[in-house]
Image 1: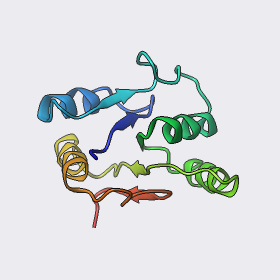
Image 2 (image 1 turned 90 degrees about the horizontal axis):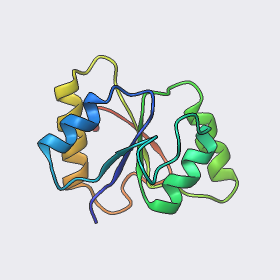
Image 3 (image 1 turned 180 degrees about the horizontal axis):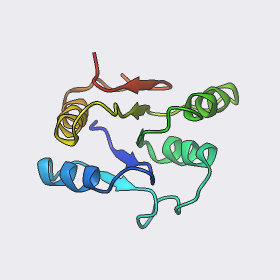
Length: 120
């Protein structure tokens, strides 16, 4: 099963646009899009939404997201994964990493963890 991405509302929309352009069959939604959590939704609620709808969260939230994930897991919840962007990577490099992850990952490979780009 291919990864579906939910882009954090604080990410530049260029990531969603370029991912869709590079890989048109990839599901790439952003917070605030139809059928996603509205902008301003708290991180714990975003994690619940990602769990329910099987989306990997793509974020640049390095400060509070690890704490929210720990709390989420401690409450018996799960998540398909969180990808943390690397500020030293270009948009193009980031897009390549996300496409590769979506197309070549094993099912459950990123479950219940934060993975930092570039992926190992």
